[in-house]
Length: 81
Image (cartoon, rainbow, N blue to C red; front, side):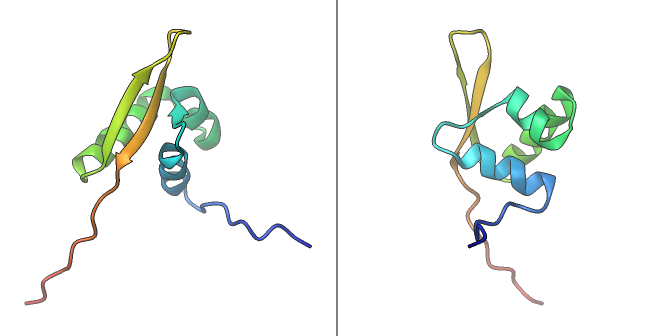
């Protein structure tokens, strides 16, 4: 039986899925999953923050950082004129 688990289809969706994991994701994981350079991955996370996501950065013993989404964007109702 084929695996019915869907993988996110866009790079943005893949990064958000990685960041929503309980353990989060390192910058290296994000870059390897998207093909982005580190500065592009950090800029994308800045954009997520501006859109209302809460992203925390935890330092790890090896000198790197783990990023996690702790609060997702609340869906807003669009007012129609």
